[in-house]
Image (cartoon, rainbow, N blue to C red; front, side):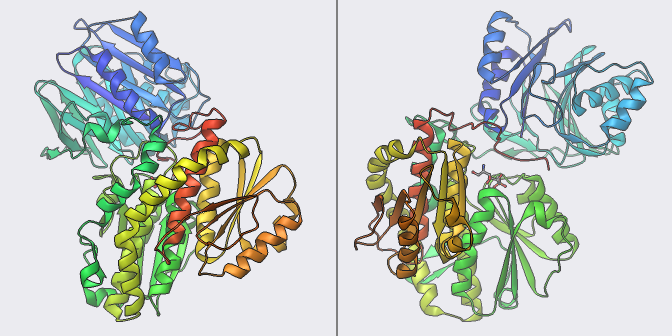
Amino acid sequence: MCGIVGYIGEREAQNILVAELKRLEYRGYDSAGIVTLSDSATPTLLRTKGKVAALEELVGQHKTSDTVGIGHTRWATHGEPSKRNAHPHHVGEIYLVHNGIIENYQDLKTMLSGHEYEFKSDTDSEVLAALIDYLRRDSPDLLTAVTGALKMVVGAYGIAVLDTTNPEEIIVARQGSPLIIGVGDGETYIASDASALVGYTNQVVYLHDGEIGRCTRSGLELQTIESQKLDVKIEMLDMDMQAIQKQGFDHFLAKEIYEQPTSLAATLAGRVLPDQKYARLGGLNMSDDELRHVKHIIIVGCGTAYFAGVQASYFIEQLTDDVTISVEIASELRYRAFNVPEHSVAMIVSQSGETADTLACLNELKRRGVKCLGVVNAVGSTIARAVDGGVYLHVGAEISVASTKAFTSQVAALTIFGIMLANAKGTNPQFIDEFVQELAILPSEIQKVLDKQGAEIPSIARAYADYNHALYIGRDTLYPIAMEGALKLKEVSYIHAEAYAAGELKHGPIALIDDHFFEVCYIQDNWLYEKSQSNLIEMNTRGAHAIVITDTTKKVPGETVIRISTKLSHLTPLLFNVVSQLLAYHVAVKRGHDVDQPRNLAKSVTVE
Ligand code: M6R
């Protein structure tokens, strides 16, 4: 949510900042801005509503050769998307870019108004800039002023701050919102997301909560908010250019859908061992004895990560006999008076590893003494660092706001955890073997779907792109897929889409069916086939425009039937999901939407 960049070095900062912002645009894209300082500390502030392309145009008209600057791409929280509310915010001598939320900004604003500060924007971030400027008057340097200001602030932040009286440094700080410092040769980079740094440097420092840094041309000095000096720990950034380029696809969403055979293979590598009829996850920090004692799993996530948890819960239930599972929407769980059953373990699912609600649940579960395991993609992210153990997905950068390849790998990783539990407990060896063998061939089965349905979905999408409503239905293991399919369609095509467990149709939603709706029905040949078919017939009788996604070779009464051919059984829902992804993508393209950056959304939701 929002992207921060910064640069101090010998090169022209404007170009670098804009290039970095383009890479972070998927995190927020309703306004953007940069400020650079000349050697004589003259600022050039450029801000605009809209996308980074608009900012780039502005930069073209106001070129400087300044070598220090900070920038931001915004997803609005306080204040509408506008130039006035865009970052960097300027107050007195201070320029500031901020991700996160300053919760006590109203109180601070009142206090600062008493000291003759006037505010031009509606943002909490401008208040923080004013607070730093106010404290700067009586501080020996910017670092001291920022430290003082942050001690007065309640909330979450990742910030980069420039002082026009000193163009030799940028001060950065983090509390709950990620910041990464890239260390180059005579230059230092700042970014809220590693993808901005790829190609500039592979030496990075991940800031932790409560840390404040001083970035200069010669690197980074680090301290705590209590002004205690810290060692700077440089890590290697493991991400290449390919990961952040479209590689011939029109959109990142398409690239990421088509990447799934390889991204999933990366998740499974070394973990799924079909010859040994076993699968395992290193890094969980759990012995077989500890696994044997697990009686309850709490799976926590938001959006697609939550649906991945629901999907996997069906598989884990099939694999284990004495384990109960609750799958929780993080934004709900965090305020519920929930009870933690004895011998619980929590699985914290998050592609970005930065989702605020998921992180809050993790902290609460840890406080209650629950062992928390992460299922995370972004290496070094906040959740990955805070969990007691866990598994990285290794699917590479997921740039499209709509999550696709992460879902498939999240389900796979959680299913492997189920296999480990079942194995440790000695339950269902037959099922364990079946799941292991299916996981092993899942990447190639997905490839078959991409080859065949990749060719046939565009024309199907054209036929349904003008509807305004869609109903997704599935039973049992196909219900989570229906929910995920509906989410994918609504977020990229803006078609109103709802998902229902097929058995629920008669309890209300069937009343909706009319010519404005199309229906997506998932039907699996070897699993509740007759019951699912009955639901389809009930809908057809009421004039449904049904798209049936199925693996059966039998005759199916749908308006459009999409047949996949597969050797899978348990994991077939994951193939149906790839079909839903393709359908959502092509419908959105047909409707002319910006599929990678859908309206009102941002990739990583780091605020409540
Ligand atoms: O980074 P996370 O996995 O924690 O993100 C969770 C959701 O915000 C995310 O899955 C969101 O629902 C996607 N836009 C779905 O495509």
